Length: 72
Image (cartoon, rainbow, N blue to C red):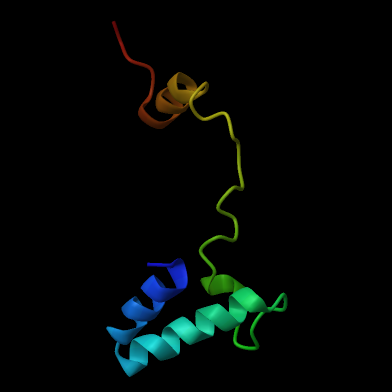
């Protein structure tokens, strides 16, 4: 079964409402422009990579700052 045939088979199982939602995603994928109803404040990917990227190497420093220095 080809990928297209498999997709068509899966599409046959979706409700009209699910197809409508899926169609909106497909249209966005095919278009470089953002949709008219795009709201940056609701986009979960905005700011996802903002901030320091060396969290693993700073883990002890972060824990000390958050929980205080451990007393021996």
